[in-house]
Length: 150
Length: 150
DNA sequence: AAACAGTCGGATACAGTATAACGTCTCGCG
DNA sequence: CGCGAGACGTTATACTGTATCCGACTGTTT
Image (cartoon, rainbow over all chains, first blue to last red; front, top):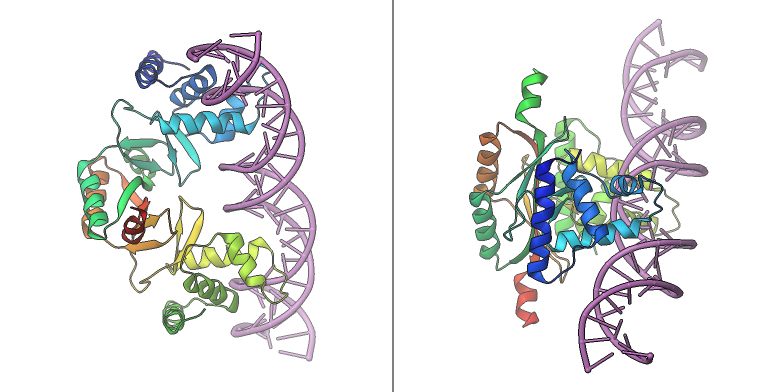
C-alpha cells in the first residue's frame, strides 16, 4: 500500500540525489519504495521477495547494493539488532538518529534526540575517540503494547 | 595469553555464578576465558576455532549455548554492529553499557556513562516506551589510531 | 540399587544473512 | 567511434545462527 506520503518521500529522494549528483536508479528507488510502504523494518530477503513480485528473477547482491547506496545517502537506516532496514523519516539533513523498537508489535520509532547525541559526543571526546557512526537502539515495549499487555 | 587479570575475572565469575545459583561449567568458563584473553571482540566461529585447539571436535551450538548463558549472566556482551562478543569489564552489578569501537585497530572500550543512560531513559519515557535492552555502539577511530593516522 | 527428572552438551542438518568474483550493458565523454 | 566508469545480473560461497534429536551425567526419590 503506497500512500501519498510514500510518494512524497520518493520525490524528495529524487530531488536530494539529483542535488548530490548521484543516481537514484530504478532498482534503488524500488527498494526505497518497498521500505517506505512497510509499517515495520524489513530484512534484505524480505525486500528481495517483494521485488520479485511479478516474475522478476533477482539475487541478493542486487538488494544489498541498493541498500548500500541508500544507506550512504542517508535515505534508509539499518537496525543492527534486527538485521533489518527502515526508510528514514527525515533524510534532508545528515543526522544520527536513535530507534525505539517494540519487540511485541515490531514497530520502530525513529527519534532524534539532542540530549542523547550530546551525551554520546561528550563521552567519546573524553576518551579522545572520533565517532563516525552511531548505533543507538532501545528494545522494549511501546506505549500501545504496554497498554494492551496489562 | 591468559594474564593474571583474566584469571581474576574468571574467579569473580565463579563467585558470581555460585552466588546466583547457576553453574559456570567447564565449557562456559572456557568461552569466557577465550573472550577475556582476546584484545578484541571475537565472532562465535572464532571462539569455536579457539576451543578446537588441541583436536577437540565441537559444533556451533556448543558455543552459542555457552554465549547465551554468559549473556544472560551479564558476563559478556554482544556487539551487534560487529556480530561479535566481548567479555564484560565489570559484571558485578547489572548494567547497560556503551561501546566505543575503533574500526582501525579493532579495539573496543566499554564505558558506562550515566548521562547517556539518563538521556536514553528520558527519551524513552517521553514516548511511553518501556526499555528492556539498550544497544549503544559508536564506531569510529580511537585516540591511539587517530594519532598515528595523521 | 533402580527409576526418574533435569540440565548439559555432542552431532547433524539446516535457515538466514551477506559478500566475492566475474561478465555484460549502458551512458557520458574525449 | 572507442574508452572508462558505474550499475546490474548471475553464480557460487562464506559467515552467522537455530532446530532437533539424542546421549551422558547429576542428584533425588523410592
